[in-house]
Every structure is written in structure tokens, then in C-alpha cells.
Image 1: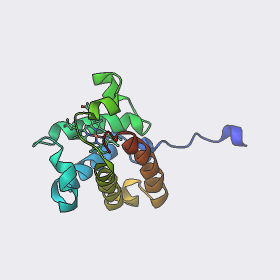
Image 2 (image 1 turned 45 degrees about the horizontal axis):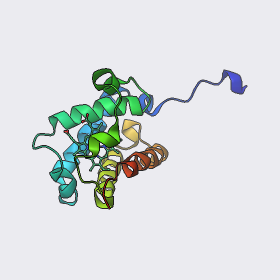
Image 3 (image 1 turned 45 degrees about the vertical axis):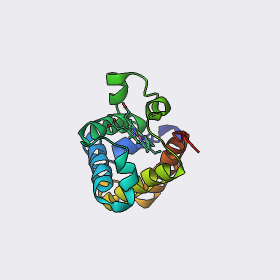
Length: 136
Ligand code: HEM
């Protein structure tokens, strides 16, 4: 009876809600801070990553199907416009995606991120990250 099937859980719910999204964002920025291969990406960010952590956390809650915490604070994200001050080419896009892939992988199924969900989210992140490219 397809009509009575429960709606599929959002990625936000599968990650365990706000605390799960926060854990993902924290792992993402911890890796960006520590891994030499993400040094170029890290260098684009402010010295303190506290504000970046909060903003990405608020944004991803909505993007993953939870509450629109970013929009409530700042209005429409206009992500591409907000990234224009930072030179983003393919190398920066790929570092961002590799950093997020690594964060998801290190949290893994115990945090609700099984292989299939990691793959699905990575494809969606690719679309957003690719759209952020603003220089050759
Ligand atoms: C393509 C490579 C990307 C690079 C190099 C990049 C870099 C940056 C930098 C340097 C900032 C400023 C941080 C700060 O003000 O503390 C930023 C802000 C932000 N980024 Fe990215 N980013 C990328 C992709 C993405 C993607 C794919 C997303 C979402 C899925 C995203 C979401 C955000 C958000 C929500 C902010 C805060 C915007 C604001 O309110 O100012 N970024 N990004």
C-alpha cells in the first residue's frame, strides 16, 4: 500500500537532527584545519573558524531537510554571491568536496551516514560546490 507508506526520512533526521549536523560541520572544519592537503582551502577562511562553523551548521540544517536556521537569521542564502569575494576554481571546489567526503566517511554509519547516504550527499554537494566556481 504505497499510499500508507511513511515518508522517507530526510538526511537531517537520519543524521540525528541538529546535533548530528553540528558533528558533521565540526569534523569538516577540524579536518580543514589539520590536513595539509586542505591548506589552500583553509587559507581562504578567517583565522578563527567559529563563525564559519556556525554559518555552515545553520545552512546545512535547512539544506538537509531540517529547520531553515540560516534563512531565519540572514534571509535568502545567495550562496554564489556570498562566495564571490573568495577565488574559487576547480582546485578549491575539489578540496571542499574532499574535505566533506572525509568528514562524512570518518563519522560513518554510526552517525547515520551509511555508504549510500554519503554518496547521495556527495553528489548533491558537488552540484552546489560546482556552482560556486567563480574563476577559471
Ligand atoms: C566550492 C568550494 C567552497 C569554498 C572554497 C568555500 C569557501 C568559503 C569561505 C572562505 C567562506 C567564508 C567563511 C566565513 O565567513 O567565516 C564560506 C562561507 C560559506 N560557505 Fe562556502 N565554500 C565552498 C563551498 C560551499 C558549499 C558547497 C556550501 C554549501 C553546501 C557552502 C556554504 C557556505 C555558507 C553557508 C557560508 C556562510 C555564508 C555567509 O553567510 O557569509 N560553501 N565559504
